[in-house]
Amino acid sequence: MPPRAARTLWWGSAGLVLAVLGTSVLVAGAEHGWRLPVAVTLVLVQVCALRWQARVPVVVLAANAATGLAVWALLPAVTLTGALLAAQFTLCVLSAIRPRRVSVRALAAMCLPAPLAFAAGGPAGVAVYLLAVVLAWTAGQWRGAQQARRRADVRRAVVEERARIAREVHDVVAHTLSVMVIQAGAADDVFTRHPDQARDALRAIETGARSALGELRLLLRAFGPEEREDENREEREPGPSLARLDELADTVRATGMTVHVCREGAADGLSAAVDLAAYRIVQEALTNTLRHAAGADEVSVRVTAERECVKVTVVDNGRTPQGRSPAAGAGRGLVGMRERARLVGGSLRAGPLAGGGFEVAARLPVERVS
Image 1: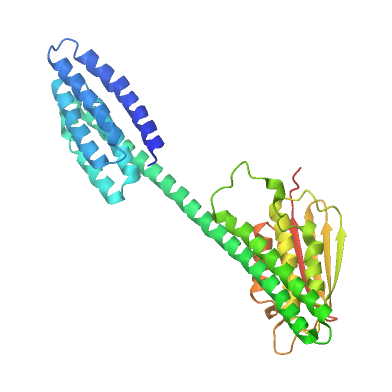
Image 2 (image 1 turned 90 degrees about the horizontal axis):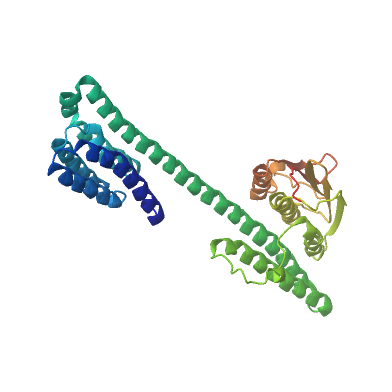
């Protein structure tokens, strides 16, 4: 338990014990001479012991139960339920933070004084006492289950975020390396006859590598410490988005592929998640064209921004190799694109066209941000 939460728990439980049990002891012991100061001392011991109930709840429970029984023995006018109020608080904390088998044993131990409650108050007295003890244990179980669900949600969020980052790394590396491999092959082919073209290809490789490194730094920054507030944020390189679609197309054009980019509607004001998902779908589709579209030399990218959705369509003029199923061309890439669309509440379909070529079409519902 965090120190701040432990202090808050202590102050809250100590205040209630002093208010309820302390007042009962003062009223019941007003005419009992020496018993009153002893009972007040025992109450203060319980309050002090509550300070460590989050660290050693079993020890604190035993101490508060013993001192509570002593208070009841000194002042029988104080009900057993009231005298063991501090022990009930500790039972609740123990039930929340310790394994169930430990809390069940503690519950059984707290039920042992029930015959004393029956002797003092009859059936009503024992019923009230047992009800208070069971409610304290149940409240702790509910709190423990709530904390367990919260921890599970955090772990699930971490796993999902790592999966997203892994897909980001895959997209960046796969696309950039595909372009770099093609550029390297082109440079090798023309190195002797056309050195200027070879230099252009090498510069494109350098530019692609620098761009990939920049994006990888942005991704890995998510695992690092938070940036200082005084850092100049305007100097950062903008992250992947539809606004950089022409840059993405240029990297593919550098391989000799003809890329047509068509925009319809205003795509600005999209949420970051949808903007990134659309960009990555286009990037993965272009990468798959370079890798798997046999004979393709032209690809068209169309982004249509409507009021309620963004439609992304990527079509190449390649042919599906014989012996390969239509859905197998992109392999892991198709799975990644579908997952990206699903994460933002959209859908994606991909497959060969009747007249030749391969089409990737995504529909991403959007909520525009002002």
